[in-house]
Length: 316
Length: 286
Image (cartoon, rainbow over all chains, first blue to last red; front, top):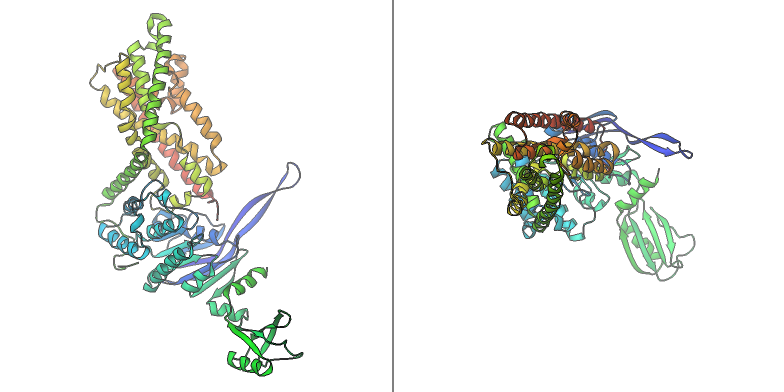
């Protein structure tokens, strides 16, 4: 569905060098990305700020010309065939609106039907479904400028789907949303993905979006792909393990070890210890610990994707 | 999403031409609706148009008093009053001022949303502007003309073709004006901020378009050069000369034909500039 081969985008930045002189510097925003995404895949595309996520998305949707490399989306080349491609993709930029500022949602949607030339029955069916799943009814008549961010995002999602796109690009669709709206957007997308006929590419900084929605995770940094695979593969690669956190009644004896686990931290005057579980099971580790020292409280902590990703980002 | 069998891309059952017309019509409707939302602004604007109409009318009539044979630049007093009041009515129909939407969208990067539509930005913005003009025609045109007719003797068209020609001339002026505004706004593709060009345009179109005074007051050769060499006199001077019947029937038609030429030129130019811009466009923001 989407093919990128050695895709690059350079920007020329002029840097101050002396009073009047400016030096030209070429910055590679996207530096040789090759990816292939199949029909129905849900791909999370993440990276730190300035990693090149949005730039990639702009090239995929045809609003930015690549410096080199090839792109193909739905078998079309985005920039020269932009208007043709527009009929087959849906795009939501979390930070911009594609709705008509002065018009109520209902009229924006009606207008989109004409712009995309969707037969009335199809349009009505899709709109009906979105209205149900995204609870649009209470603000269908409100002009877009008066909508809250969460309401607007639900409107944007609907607008991007009314023409039945094959590929949906979402650039930070949950940015700035409250928990409830985030949940609404996520479960809507999950349902969409479960049907399996829309290919979804999602960029986000909220990793819960990814955990909830995407089986495949592509991490980019400095314009290059640094990870491409499942979330589990990412955990495995970065050796993220579960850990055992225990509050002890007495400090840990010197030289205490648990087989198959490493002591990661001792805090609260030696009363709180954290072990990472390398090969030991949680049960064995708990039994070993309880046998050696009196334990007040303990918990087993799952590896956190945020930790893994922050480690990935800081490895620059 | 649902109903996958309804294969995408969805082409309407209408023929492609009729579908295009329907799309264009819907976009015109959206332009109309956007302006119809702001009723107080419409009222306030109309009121301002009327007030300035009195100012301009008295100044020009005073000029007429002092001119040789009371015919400055070949207009009699009734024609001058018609020139002023029809001009006040047309101001917000043709809309030479105040459109910075494209420049703003380029600056903020919102232009991306326009580029992601299956319809070219020039076409989409033109349709919206025609809708705006239609709204202006229905709400802003009549009141100044009526005020003028109550307080001043206006020129009554003597030829049957004057009124239809006037209508055509207005439509063409709207299109020419749109082309000019589009080009001025499109400088933002290169400059990021089009405020400078927009200011120049606001000043230039008012003076050289015939808004502040009839261009015929200027030397003949200069006016002819202006008319043939720039689209500006085609914005207001032409429709106003047509309705005031300043010239004979042949010149009247020739002026409108010149407008047609400019309308086509400006639209082609806008399309060309847009295509050039897209090749180097950097959509701003993350």
